[in-house]
Image (spheres, rainbow, N blue to C red):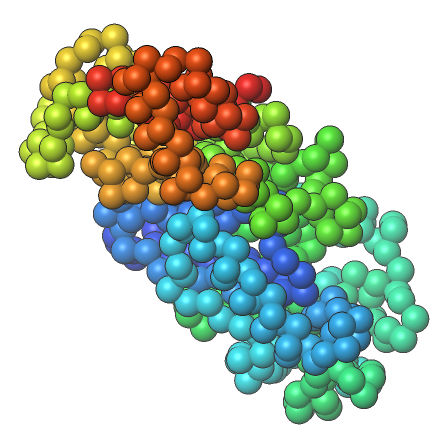
Length: 480
């Protein structure tokens, strides 16, 4: 397995620190607002990466944090007239509600900053004692010039940084590049904790160092996040962590590309975000997962409804064909299970893994799935279809995608999408089923014009009726 390590930019063999074990930390949300699709650009690829590593036999320990104290949280608390604690709790609960739709793996640990203040204080003490930080008027700053490797992750030189740097009013830094490890309390309504330097709260960067090392050790395998975190957040994490321990901190740094809207990075500060409830009114979670995961994790993704609709159409065709052909061939789950040791199935899985082992190359790996699907369609063979379903069951295990058919997961993408469209158009699923039955009766009575009127009515809400040997099948439809 090879990965592109952001630290140094090299394409490297992935060799975990401990045999058959991978420890990974992914930066989570600062919980002052609701999650949006830009956050999924990071969370979905790392879900695929972690699933795939487990599939390859690694024991994975996965940590993702919540930043539950921050300037933005304090500001939101003032706006909403509630405590910072209540703001954080509110948006953590909404995050869990939103992310549950996508069936992503739950981290082994989800630490919150406010629950790790003693760990953060102890880490700051080490950095000061080792000569890399200093306290002034209740603040503690990391002294950037003391760390000679500063800038190696981002590739930004300190000289270039200094050219545009300045000290903000109220700061007593020795150098404009120095960053806060601990912030003295300034306002009465500001949450604070006692420390050797006075009452205050942690700086943003120190929290991830403290929490990642608490659960994964002073050295671990992978640190991940979005590209926007490379500088200054991850650059500062490296500096303060190595300054505290003298060890390497994270061995591999993986960063996901931006999600853009009309060429601009999606972010709350730009006001161009699409939140999850808004998105789920339009698309099934599997469509969104596939849309993001099919891009290489390091690539930018341009968001648009039109782009997602193309993937929606592809998945509808994929899942409907599989369900219908499997029903027609009377395939059973035990047949799929027995086929897992078939040489053709193993060869397909090996080909898939070879592509994924190349820095998690999902574009090529997913193309292999669709190519194999097309070959099965051409073959018109039950055995080949069973082989493909056996292969697909493994791909679902490896990625969390391509498994939404009853024979694999007891779930049906087609049925779920029909139900979602019923909800979108304000019609009950039972009412739709009743209309389908009524149409069947009208057809039996040879009242074809009235039957066609029902079909048109359902088409208007995005449900196409396909007449088959098993009766009328409900298929999600889009005119796009």
